[in-house]
Image 1 (spheres, rainbow, N blue to C red):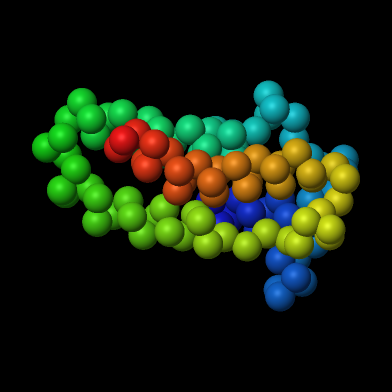
Image 2 (tube, rainbow, N blue to C red):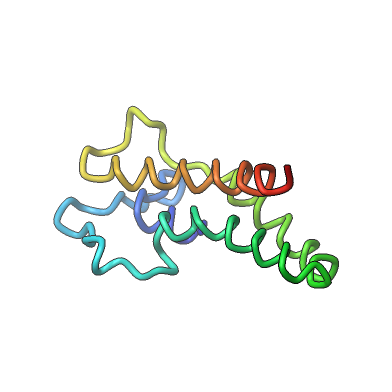
Length: 109
């Protein structure tokens, strides 16, 4: 996901510019592995699978927790600096971060 954030929003520290308005892919062209909307749903799917296959929790939780923390900690640009053509993607990124934290909590209640 870190790679996706850098590709779309750029990275000020390394001088990578944000994606140009004419280069923003439409929803049809976005690969699922690069889609914040797909990443938003992944925690829910994983938690549902864990409910069905509880024996898979112990061997996989040690791998999943760092990924969830990494997703929550991703830093995009400041909201005021997001170009107008990337605002929807920025909202989707923030939604995927919230989903990485809240979905497991909601499914455990």
